Image (cartoon, rainbow, N blue to C red):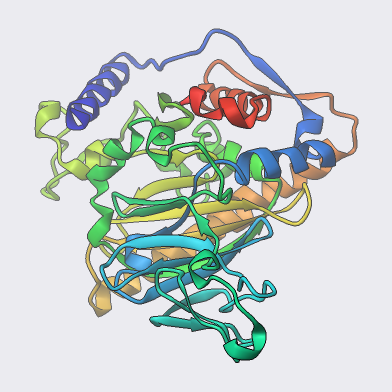
Length: 398
């Protein structure tokens, strides 16, 4: 069924391309400028969005083997993701139940037991408390009730989601709204993590606006890659998650078989999967996936998180490759990833940081999203909707 959806979207885009049109929404929408810098609103966004909704914290290929783990801090919450000896994923608060010390420093590794560096309490790869140092002197406690605090998690389609609220009643499956079935066509379970890095940026919504914005590509990125793209986009929604794709493609982008021919006229059902999966796939509230071909079929998965204050964010970039590259392919992949760093850090986020300063003056009342920017309109509607929904009713949104 999801493959049919890909064909359906391709047919719609092809029809628009042939007519020189795109899907437009009804009206221009105004968003209050203070939404991008107001500290009270920003704190609500962190607490009610990032600390309540499932977040993409890793990919299967980052911790593929039994005993692998990843530790990171997410909006102030220390998290550890473990893959046990059965190969199953679970997530926990990276904090010993004795006095709260972190079991491991941020990063990845492989181990089956985790000993607290403060007093030596020990946990296994399922978060179970296995040993208490000097137990006979410490006193009686029920070890079965004092394992690591578990966080809801789900590994699906090569992506790992974690919810930071241990008591969350929101099903991650329901939250995905069927979008995972579309992401399955990337086949990320078997992909290779080529390289990762972090980039500092503006307010998380300024950055996310850019993920969904194809309108700026031929202007802001004219000197890097933008002259190969249209400023038009069609948007498709699965709950709060969206795909943005241009209905316009240049002939050289349609040389599917590398034989110097434009295959755009081929029946959509004959298009290769990487062409059907083109565009930007966003996972609300903080991830984008975009396809590239530097060194072979590849994607950049961008994991966006709020920084320490409203005007800051951090983006963790994962360059994933369908196959582990040889030496020559690795050189091409490095060139692609380095270009993307420049594009995001200098062009996108450089512009975002400057506009952030303008907004923070308080002299600009609102920003606008046009009829051709439906993706941004939908994103901000979902932000407001979630901020205005209490915990007990959150599952009803999806």
